[in-house]
Image (cartoon, rainbow, N blue to C red; front, side, top):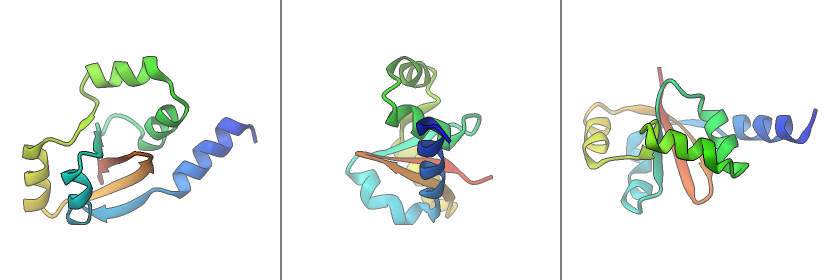
Length: 98
C-alpha cells in the first residue's frame, strides 16, 4: 500500500456519523465545511490534506465545498440531520448521510 492509499484508509477510519446538534459549537467558530453529496467525503478530505489547491479551488468555486451557511445550519437543526464528519485540521468536513 502506498502512502496515498494509507492516508485515504486513515481518513476513512476517522469518519463518524454525528447529529448536527453535536457540531454546533464548531459551526459557531466557523470551522465546519459542507461537502456536496456528489463528492466523496474521504476523497475531499484526502485532497485537502494533500494540499491539492487547484482541485480544492475548483470545488470552492463550484460551491461543492463551502462553509456551512446559517440557513443550512438551521435546516439541519430543525430536521435533526445526521452527518458524516471527518476532521482535517482546522476544518471539520461534513456531508449529509443518505
